[in-house]
Length: 582
Image (cartoon, rainbow, N blue to C red):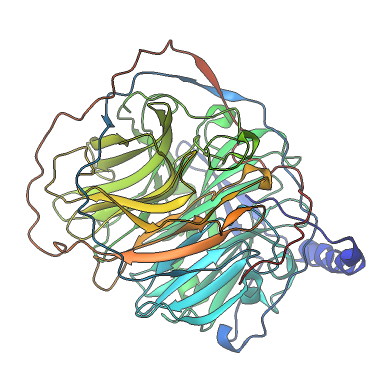
């Protein structure tokens, strides 16, 4: 979630807009119906409005004035982590063999589209002919063959222009864009609300053209503070995880799963969502839903798999079985809990964590090391299923990225096929995103920084036949970065995004943030790049087992570490005085 600013001179216009919104919200409130399912409390909600937009390319861009946002307070520290020696560290670099970038170009710069906010929440997706990037609060479409802009950047709320209510006038960001390759459609979402984000606005394109028309939906999720939405494509639904707080934003209530009726939304019909409520309460760690890669769907009728960050020492694997015809049959159940290798938690009590050159330690960057990073990428290879994701840990005195591959997550038995902490030197690496191509080659994009290296975009990877638990193809630089960030409440990224081209099922596309020359505040830039392993599409060799290098460290004394709030919003920051570069 972002930190955002407010212009007092716009207060009068804002009050009028909010008055309209309050009336509209009361008239169009989603009806939530509870039904007792087999073991879970099931809640069904229906969109309070849906329609079809004009083509986006024909719509007048909307400029939403900056406005005051409800700011989350620090959460009560709940949950415990016991630091342990990390037995799966890759402590040295392999020779550089990663492919060079194919395209490498700038994305949306600060301030997004009049957002004056940080972090950018950078993510993007590649489709049949286009690449779409989305940040707080901007949306841009590029030609994926040339990198040339096709549309934008425009405000995300332009998509909901004329829709009314909070989706049009109070969209708050935390945006996500996906490409539903099974239907060749785009899925765009952001949360919205009058004072706290209680609604999710979802738009599904009517064609494969991201500049065309969209089936638009407004869903009211409840009265709580619904934060940090992450979505995934699955054959029967668009699945979403939320981190839920009380209305005041002072207490974390737990994570909550949602499923939106994909069939109805592709058709532009009235749609429902199903949720089984908050999972486990405030002591439950956050999780991500599976997002399908490739053209091979999961086994028929397979549930969507959610995987939980392993603060408790295991990867909790949940199955969300959803039944839109008989919602009470829907269940969200724990399916497996394979063990996670030990690790040391990184910077759970401070945002000023990752060092940069030329700035004081109070301007170090947020590591967001208390959760999985977007996405949980799923792929069905026919003879096995795999999901890959990553999270940031402390290793060798710096930040390292723990990447994992779980297999057979829908049918079982679930196994941890690979897990390794990538910490090959003294550079800090964090804000990762992982995915696999059609041949089982894996790539990991991430931010890299240190006291002598400005924040950069890099990527590393492995071929399917490389020794297990290693990124044996070394590391490459997508963009070296140019400067350091000062102030900005230490916020960085919130997430980055690595996705796979649905046409060749081989080309990786990565997007993340960086800073321009010098040291500046509220001045982020974004970058987009693609690359491809030359061996993709060939016969996949059997990977060879190896002993993963282990960093020799003194065994730490196990310590109970408090879990921080799930991306709390910092207090508002003074408006920067410079003019952003575009």
